[in-house]
Amino acid sequence: MTERLYYTDSYTAEFRAGIVDASPDRRRLYLDRTAFYPTSGGQPHDLGSINGIRITEIVDEEDGRIAHVLESPVASDEADCRIDWERRFDHMQQHTGQHLLSAVLLELFDAQTISFHMGAESSTIDIARPALEPNEVRQALERANRIVFENRPVTVEFRHASEDLGLRKATAREGDVRIVAIQGMDRSACGGTHVRATGEIGPILIRKLEKIRGNIRLEFLCGLRAVRRAHADYEALAAIGRSLASTLDETPPLVAAQIEKLQDAEKSRRKLELELAQARGRLLYSETQPGEDGIRRIRRDVPAITEELRAEAQSFTAGARAVFLATVNDPPSLLLAVSKDAGINAGQLVKEAVTRAGGRGGGNASIAQGSVPTLELLNEIVQQLR
Ligand SMILES: [Zn+2]
Image (cartoon, rainbow, N blue to C red; front, side, top):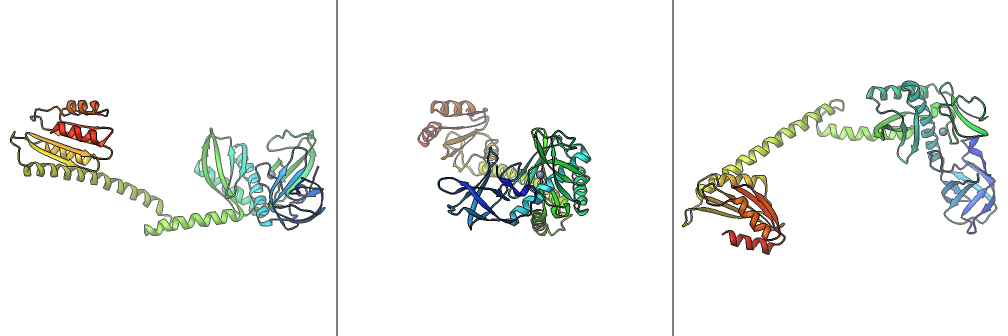
């Protein structure tokens, strides 16, 4: 078993230890004692170096030993160890912040914490509650931050599992249990690294709520993470505010109003476009000379069959004795519109022609569209329709 220095002192950042075992390539080392924290309990492993060689992983092995995985081999029997302290202290802040937040959520809303995950940017806890209202989030934030200001001691003690431990969440551990306590607030069985007083957690920020399998996943940040995130949020909001020439607090209702305005404008633009297409259809009708059979024919190549095109075709064929045919090369497709007196059933004609060509389509007696597999087949149909 490796002696875990971080159990009794989370603040050891540099230490010496003996190398008691190693893998044949000497990149995986076992020390007699270590302050490096291995991945466990939702907290990522530490980084740092041994004899100047960078650590890539710290593993908590099943036999109670801790493996230190290095970038290159270490030949010596002695280890000169340095922990990446800034990263470790940040982890201690997030982890202690989690204990505090979990205790506050239980105290205020009887919401038990189910799980905890610490990420590189933010951390999450899942709580057994189907919802958390905005005012409840605010309440939890204020309560947690007040306890930070009170700078309550965070202590570690070892007690036997058979005793009445008074834990927030029962533990399945047997024998000696490591208990991390926030004075007057929380007692948790935990093997992680924590700060020594709540003041060191720094500001706590709750940021995002997500429903996960009937529970709430709550994203939070502590310390400099919270400061940096809040500043980044401010900058993003300020950029939006600037583009709207508005103050931050006025931005949300202004954005909502802008969206509504845009939707109205889009609706009226669509309406005008259809009206314009209809006018184009009428103009086209009046400018088109009838053929020898008295029918006015329009043949168009278009990039796509749109609603505007349909409106133009319908408007054109609203006049007497008119046929409107439009084709698209890619994908090969066509639109056929006819006036009631043209003596053609557009739906029937298009359906039969495209089905024969292995395509699909249809419509009603006055307007129809269809598509076929190739341009050659489309050209054949157009020849037939002439
Ligand atoms: Zn903990």
